[in-house]
Image 1 (spheres, rainbow, N blue to C red):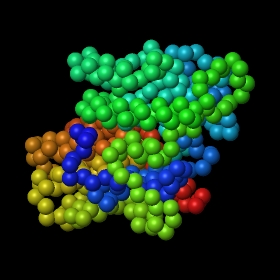
Image 2 (image 1 turned 90 degrees about the horizontal axis):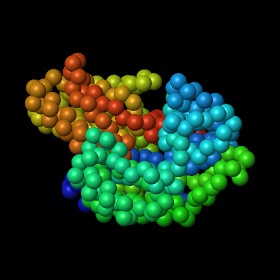
Image 3 (image 1 turned 60 degrees about the vertical axis):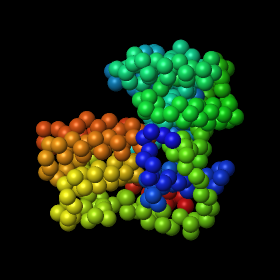
Length: 360
C-alpha cells in the first residue's frame, strides 16, 4: 500500500468502457476527486508522442511553436538543442490548452507516470527530479534498484514521490508504461526518412492512466450515460465559484489568467480551530485537484494561532500527495496567505465540461 494513502480512504475508479473508455472518474469515500475524459481530435492527448514541424523559434524565451499532423499548433519548451523553422522533431504532449494558450510539449519521447518518467532511446539520463536530494543515500539506492527494471535503451527520471513509496508500486507503473509503449508505439523512428508531421503514439488509455493515479483501486464499469448523472452533478458543483462544505464552511474560488485566490468563510461553522484547520485543508486540496486549478494559488485562511497555521500547512502537504501534479506548498506568506504553485496539466474543469457537453 502507498505510504501516502490513509488506510481509512476507500478509492474506486468508474469508467464507461473496459477497453476503449471515453471518460473516467476517481472516487474517494464515494466523493469524486478527479475526472478525465477524451475531448476529440482537436486537443492532443497528454502523453501522446508526435513528429512535429517547427514553425517559429523564440530563442529568448526558450520556446518554439510547432505543427502536429492534423494542423494543430503547439508550444514546445526548448533545450540546448538548436532548432530552425521547418525542422522535424519528436515531441511529447505534457499539457492541454488552457485559456488561449496552446497545448505544450517537450522535446523527445517521454512516458510519464506518478513516480517515474521513462525516456525511450535516451539511456544517458538517469536521475532524481529534485537535484537537492539526488545525492541522498536512499535516492541512490532506489536509482540502482530501478535501473534493473528499465530496459538498457531507456533513461528515466524518478519523481520526488518515488522516494517515499513502496518499490512494488514503481515497478508496477514501469510495467504498465512499457507494455503499452511496446504494443502501440511506432518507435524508434528515423527522422531523416520522415517528410511531414506524424503521430507516433496516442498515449496510454484513460483506464491505465487512472490505474497509475490510483494503483490499488477497483474498477466499476458504467457504460450508459444515465449512470453518470450523479457524477455530472458533482462536476457541475465543482465548476461553481462558491462551494459549501458539509460543515457549512464557504469556500470561494476566483481565478485569473495566472493566479487563483481561495477565500475561506468559516463564520457558519461551529468547529473548533484545530478541527476547522483539518477540515479546510482536506476540502481545499481536493477541490484544487478536482477543479484542475494550476499556477499560483493563494489560500486566505481564518485567523488562527501560529501553531495551528503550521498544522494547516502540513495537512495541506499531506493531502497534496494524492495529486499527480505534485503541488509545491511554499508556506504562509507575509500577508497570512498559504501560497503554493501547481503545474499545468489538464485544462480547468469548467473548460473541460464546456467542451465535453458540446460533443456529447
